[in-house]
Image (cartoon, rainbow, N blue to C red):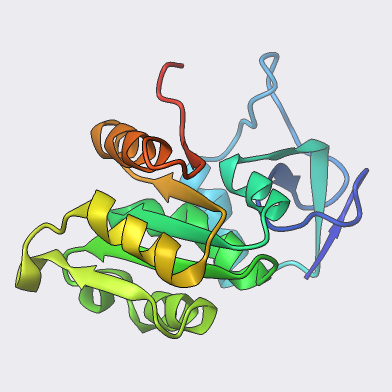
Length: 182
């Protein structure tokens, strides 16, 4: 599939608005009308187009800044692995992965598990149904030490994000997580 538009090279970590073809019906507020939101997604998955057009300029999310570092640790809990997948697929920055979630393969499927293990064959995938909740700060810090990582990126809930970021920063490790004040 080809992405066309102002930026021909939409890379990992980029957030773009997509449309099929060069015209799309929008309402006065710029929101697409005429179909339910999920209908476009379902149809696109069922009948993938050969070309998608981007609207506006790509925006870059938190994980895009990971390219500033030589080695990183990516921490995710539950469905937080979703936003991390583009970074894992891109295979740009060497990284270790720590993913804590209940029943990872059963919940997210073999394809997601395969992507995580391809990105980091020694990924720490913690099944909370079998092992309970881990000490996220201690295990993250251990991964930083073992891999000589320069920074930590976490995608989780607000409370755990703040805890891990604080835990890393107090140990002198740059750590980044989503801002939840918007």
